[in-house]
Length: 205
Image (cartoon, rainbow, N blue to C red; front, side, top):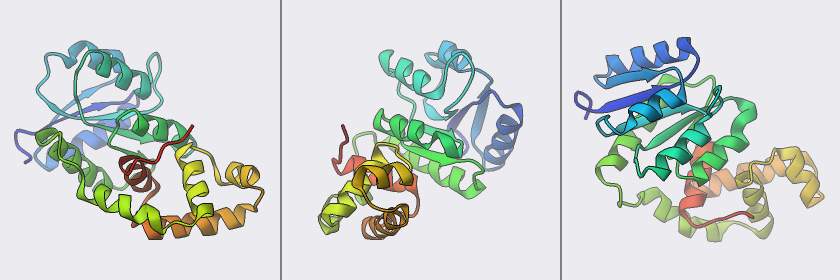
């Protein structure tokens, strides 16, 4: 797929743009970077189809707002959100709004490459449902009522302590339930768990 596959990086941090560009260029992708979300939005309609990697927090317009404005203009760029640890609730919101994945900083190079490859496959077959998400629908039935409540708390972007408070249990108990949810759902990361759960139809208020 690399060679004529396009990846667009939108991040106000020049070091992040440069490192991602070097990584993706070395793998054969056609990479273009933007320092501001508005710059990408202004150019988007004339760009070849491709994968968008956007930071969740940027000046003037953040990744969520960029995602919303692209949708308003019916511009489809499978999106990967880059997030800091404290921005996970925002990243979950981005996935609910249609982002394919979120990756926490500091991120591993392979995590970026895997996510980009998946996003570009979705670009080629936009209506094809993720087979792992189909399996996740069945796996939801394996969760206990309490595990389902913890899952819904995670989808709401709540930290363990907030989930513990809402359910009147200890944070340690939340951690145990969270680990069991990850195991039963077959998720290797929080972003994967969120993606599986949303694709399986789990919704939060």
